[in-house]
Length: 408
Ligand SMILES: Cc1cc2nc3c(=O)[nH]c(=O)nc-3n(C[C@H](O)[C@H](O)[C@H](O)COP(=O)(O)OP(=O)(O)OC[C@H]3O[C@@H](n4cnc5c(N)ncnc54)[C@H](O)[C@@H]3O)c2cc1C
Image (cartoon, rainbow, N blue to C red; front, top):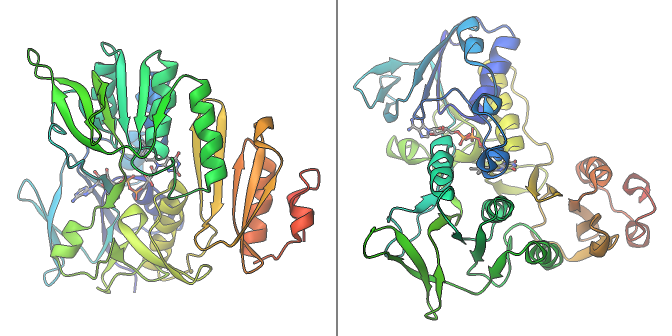
């Protein structure tokens, strides 16, 4: 039997996909959406790119215009945080004391920036980047800043670096590992991206751990980032991008199984049959890769939001698409298809010097992931080959003139 009332917690990408699917598939029951930000669901990727640069209006971030939710009879509770799930009574409690009953609950609470554990990390002028409000605060400081230090050389840090450089700021990235983006890509792609940043005048310093952020004696604002080796980097603006953690605290407090995210099955069901979870907040089994994964991408939030809605409608479908992720830095479009974890062979297609190339990752002869840089055509073929567990010929793969789809 279909639920008569679905409550969705977290008004982000996964929630938007779930609402879309539920209404498009004809669900006529009540849907309530609770979100702690005071905005309708919006896209986060432009936050570190065009929106930070001031080149995109706020309305363009919205996944659906506000009237969509009225027209589709969505009961909106924006600017409200869920503080507790009462599983026995099947209701959630909001921070203003309201209690909302549910037949089925979908948790789509996303993730939160990891804190920087260094003295001075809470000074004015030090920012994290997750929400529109964060960007507005950064933009305010950008207007009077000359020297920005970005702590963390992952995607977000590097995208912010590219944007700040384009805004004319003196930009330094401090990364504690020996290379940037080390969690997601190979040393060859890291080296290429770092060289591009250097060419644009960004100072990337690896193997550098932050010890503290020092304050200016008169203004009390951040003045410099001080590293473990004693080096000081001048900074009137600091952006911290040291990764995110799943927002699973309410789920965990309610006794749902959590382990680096809310544990779900391949249909987005949690350990409580009345509760589902989707997006950055959860960890799911990937039949393709044969292990549990927690992904932080728009694609995953969209796929899982859709999959959770199908489960709610009683028509479950296994969520097992090949994941993909993109990053834009300057005129570079980096697209990562699949997960390269455990690869034993790496094949370059094309030369980084041409600024358009791909890197293929294989494990025991099977293609498991492909990174493409300004090479969209390889990206589409990669998704199909990885999904089909293709075992391409290495010689053919290495020939950039041969389309990837013909490399079998
Ligand atoms: C700056 C930036 C750039 C990015 N760039 C890319 C990119 O280029 N490509 C890509 O694929 N991905 C990118 N991502 C990642 C992508 O945006 C996320 O993976 C995606 O938004 C996850 O969707 P979600 O629905 O799981 O969570 P979110 O979209 O984060 O939504 C979760 C919402 O739940 C709310 N919430 C949390 N707890 C509660 C509670 N207790 N009560 C009420 N509400 C709550 C949060 O405030 C938030 O609004 C980027 C992310 C950021 C921050």
